[in-house]
Amino acid sequence: MKYNKLGRTGLLVSEIGFGGEWLERHEEDESVELLKYAHKQGINILDCWMPDPKSRDIIGKAMEGCRDSWYVQGHIGSTYQNGQYVRTRDMNYVQPAFEDLLSRFHSDYVDLGMIHYIDSIEDWNHAMNGDYINYVHELHDKGIIRHIGLSTHNPIIGKMAVETGFIEMILFSINPAFDMRPATEDLDSMFEGYEKNTFSGIDPERAEFYQLCEEKEVGLTVMKGFFGGRLFNKEQSPFGVAFTPAQLIHYSLTRPGVASILCGYDTKEQVDEAISYETASADEKDYASVIASAPLHSYSGQCTYCGHCKPCPVDIDIAMVNKFYDLAAAQPNVPESIMEHYKSLSHTASECISCKGCESRCPFSVKVSERMSKTAKLFGY
Image (tube, rainbow, N blue to C red; front, top):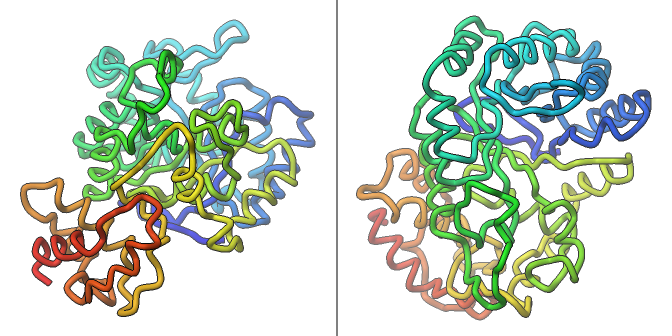
C-alpha cells in the first residue's frame, strides 16, 4: 500500500481508503470483520459521516486495540433524529451527536473533524458565523479534533474553505463525469437536462479548486469516486462507456492535491479489488483511453496527467511537469511551494528536445512540446 501526505496535516494516509456508509447494511460482526480485514491490507483512513448508532458501534469495535493506527474523518453536524439522518448546525443536536460519535468510538479524539456537508453559500454563511463554528474551533483547541476538515461537492465552497486558512483538508466528490460539470449547490441536479456532446474537459472551476488545494497544501480525500457504480455501466455512464475500479481510482489519485480515495465496500472481495490497484499495470490503470474513445465527450487539448506521454527520451516526467505548469500558470506569480516541487524534479522542461514522440501517444492531442517551452520560460529553466 502506498501512503501519501494529507496536505499540511502531515498525516500519511493510505491512498486507498474506506468509506463507511455501507456498514449498516450488514450484520454487525460481518462489518466489524470487514473493517479489520481492510486494515490488515494496509488501509488506515476511514470516513464516518453516518450518524446511526449501528455504523458508529461497528467502527468503534473494529478499532479496538488499534485506534492509533486509524485516521478517522468524523463529521460535525451529522445527527440522528427520530431514527433519521439530519444535517444541521443547531447546537442542540450537533454537540450531542458528536459526543455520541466519540463515545461509540471509545475514543477521546477524532483525527479529522469534518465540517459536515456544505454545498450552498447560504449554509456556508450559517455555518461560519455563530455557535457551530465556535464549537469546531473549541474542539480543535482542546485537541478533541486534531485537524479541521470539511466535506463538500461544490468547488466554489471548496475554494472558500481553502481560503479560510484553518481548514486543512477537504472530502470532495471526484470522478471523470463530475469533473466536466459546472459547480452546483444541488448535486442531484448535476446531470439533469445535459445534452450529448456538450462536455469538453474539466470544468474550470473544479480545475482551479484542485490547483488551489495543491498550492495551499490543503489535502483532498475523495468520495463518490465510482459515481455510485454508474461509471461501471455503459448504459448508465454519462460517457457512454464503462470504466473499471482501477481506472477510476487512478483518475482520482492523479488530481492535484488528492491523497486518498475512500471506496465503499460490501465484501472482502471488493476490498481486494480496490487494493489490487497497488499492483495494477499501466494498461489496467489507463482511464485516458476510455475517455478519449467515449462517443459522448472529449477532453481534447487538455492534459489529464494520465502518463500516456511516457517514455521520454530525456526522461522528463511530462505529466508532472504539465501538472506544475497548470498549477503555476493560473497564478500571477509562481507560488514558492510549486517552484520548490518543480526544482525537485530530476529533469525539467528546458531539457525537452521537441521530438514530439509524446504528442503521438497523447489521447487528447495535447501540444506537449509547446507546453514544455512555456513551462521552461515560466519557471526559468
